[in-house]
Image (cartoon, rainbow, N blue to C red; front, side, top):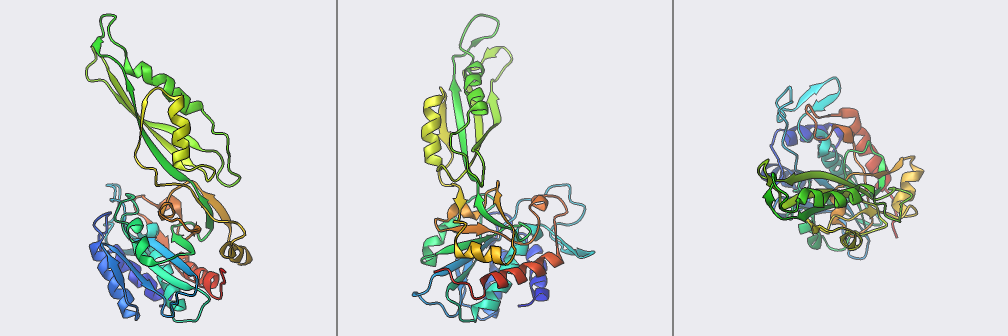
Length: 350
């Protein structure tokens, strides 16, 4: 599978709407494509995967994963987001950058190496529901894969390798009051009750800071209270977005937060923890040898679903993700294929 074939496949992918939880059509395409290259394709829901042809239970396994789903297109697009268009070396279309470039570049590398004898097994995975962190995405099929020793998660990083990624922990907080008439000295205003806790979230600093990811970052991002101008509100709900470094898991943060605030704290999930890989891992050492830049990422990905060491990299630019007139450079796809092949060919991870 050469770069031209990968680009043609990406055009086909763009032309099939694949919003989160609606990836059936593009999953069908990926299943058909893997079959055409001689691979038995496995599928569960809208997740598809295949194993390298010389798979052996005696060898360690590397997972290559990129997500099939896209966000909904905004109304700011100047062109049809589902019609691939080529202009001046750019391929425009929804999902071209996030994360179609990784889907096809990883597949091209998988096909190039899947027939060769390597010191490891490869699994190629095109997964669903990443954009909505859905229960039927990568997390739902990990047990089907068998043991995984290390993973590369495809996201638009300019082919830099993210060796650490912040986790995500979202809290819905409820401050309680007592309703009353605003004209009289009645009730307990839940908004005022919330203020002290909001200030704590704004100013508190967790003790452990990461040399890669820095401090844990907490932001109050939503607030809702009240029904009428003359009624003292008896409840104030606010939401806290927490970006977690690898020094803590989400459960540990919860245990620190709860004793420090008066409000009821309701986590949406404990599962989206921070990810990192040992800088001395053989995969990272190969990155260094090839001159691939290393960095730490503030955004989350399918790495949150993994328990094995992992890094994040792929063609494209994260700044183009979720934007109108999204595009990827053809040269970025070509470079991505070349780097993935050079990174993996002959690699020994044990």
